[in-house]
Image (cartoon, rainbow, N blue to C red; front, top):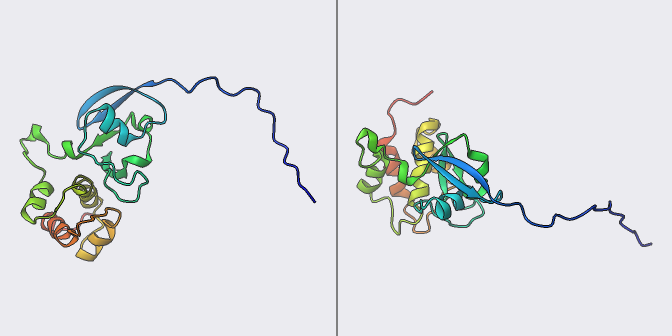
Length: 178
């Protein structure tokens, strides 16, 4: 027996793709006015349209964490979200971790990564740092095991994990955030 699939009639296919739209993103305490196609990921908006290339494109599937940025202080994979969804948010990339207005040359975690040699090739480092900043602000990690678990979404092909964990533990507040 053969089954026939009956589909609803399509009135008319769109004649063209939607045109780019104006999008205003607040990135690293600075406003960027961009013209973006609606399907532009936050990662591509950062790298291709804002010239903020510190955020890395790794797998482009949300599996490696190289593109981790902070959105309103929470870590997010920039390759898995659309730029137009973040017009009213504060986006922080690796370029914005240190608050130069406060006179910081480096964020304390950046300095700790240097002090603990927590990178080898460095490709994953921006995502690792943004994720670690988010992890510390979440206040859920108190032990090395918890840090390892909560950083497990960020992959390092060089295997610098022990040094990354040490760097994070070195700046972790002694009193847990509750």
